[in-house]
Image (cartoon, rainbow, N blue to C red; front, side):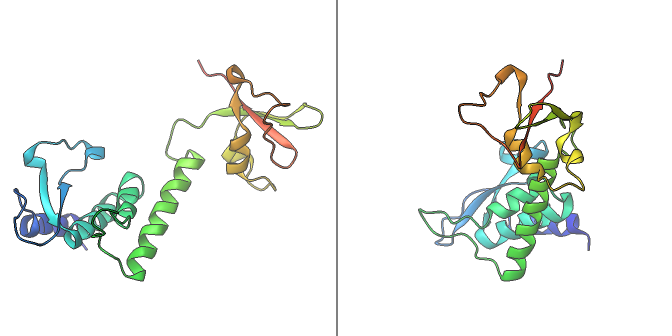
Length: 182
């Protein structure tokens, strides 16, 4: 399916330049999302019904995949406490959104598709001796009993040395220290 074509048709058919005054609920939508270089000009904004807005974000997710579009799609399920007028998805749509968000979050945690994966040294809690040096945590934990997210929670840079007597963070007897990068 050509999701870009479907998105363009949806905006052309349902997008309104001015907020309709009828009783139907409308939400403001960035035609080109700000995260993809869009802006707040009137040419890039339109009003969509709650359901059309939900479908627009689903199509944007299908066009651009995981990342900010997956998060934006998932946000469509957050109920507005004031009006309570968000589109309530069916189970399949909700499942797609949750999986997209989880995959996006996983990519952010592992540093995949990112040059910001920081090298670290892994130490023993008891001996304070290094177990591994100059490794990327998410790569190093593969095939071990350690969890990359939990080990990352122990890590800090040497510049912000976390006291081991006050608020210590360990994961299964080890901890990490990020290396200083110049």
